[in-house]
Length: 315
Image 1 (cartoon, rainbow, N blue to C red):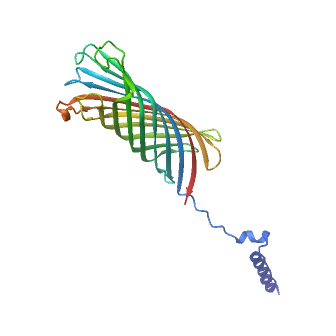
Image 2 (tube, one colour):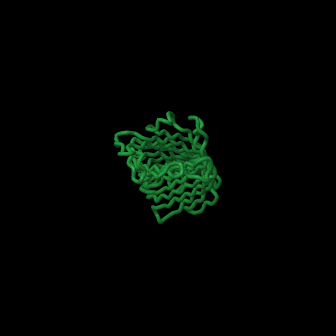
C-alpha cells in the first residue's frame, strides 16, 4: 500500500512538471547556456575640419646651399570619413578609416635665395581647387584588459594624397624680376601633387570617464614614410613638364576622442588629431635636362572632428 502511494506521488509530481506548475517545474528545467559574442564591430562616420601646412626646401647640388623654399600655409579642409573596428573575444582586433574632402583655402609663399637668385625673392599666391584623400588600416591585440579599461598595440599602414593649386603671384620682397607687376589670381601658377605612404606602429588606450563617457587616446610612430609627388610650375617655360619628387624619412600621429554612450549600441563623440610626416629626397631635374637636386619635405595635418557610431554584436 505504501509503495503504491509513493508511485502515485511521483506520478503527480512528474505530471505537474510537464503541465508547467511553477512551484514544481523549476527543479526539472535546465536552461541552455547563451553563447557569448565572439566578435564586436563598431561602424561610424566623422566630419573632420582640418588645418595644415606643407613646406619643401630645394637645395643646389648638395644641402649646403638652399635655393628655394615653398610653404603652403593656412590650408583649411573639410572631410567626410568612415571608420570601423572589429574586436574578437581573444583580444585581437582590426580597425581602419577612410576619408576625403576639399582643401578650401590657404596661401603659398615662394622664396628664392642668393646665390641662386639675387636679390632675395618672396612671392605670395592663393590656393584654390584642392583635394584631400586618406585611409589607414591596423591590426593588433590587447596588452592589458581590465574592468572597463583596455590598452592595445597595433601595426598598420597609412595613405595620404594631397593636391594643391596656387593662383596669382605678388612680389613681397625686393626682387624686380620675379612676378614683376603681379599676376592675377585668375591665373594658375603652380600645382603640387603629393602621395604619402607610411608604416604605423602604435598604442591605443580606452579609458572610462564615469558612467557614460569614455576617453580614447592613440599615439603612433611612423618609422618609415615615403613620398612620391610632382611639382608643376605652369608659368615657367623652362620646365615644360612636372618635376618628379620623392624621398623618405619618419613621422608621427596622435588622436584623442571623448565619446558619450547614448544607448547600449549608439555613441557620439568629439575628437582631435595631429599628423606629421617628413621626407629627405630628390627633385628629378634630370628629366628636363638638368641634374638631381636634394629636396626636403614637411607636412602637417591637424584639426577637430565630430563622430557618431553604432555597435554590432556577432556570434
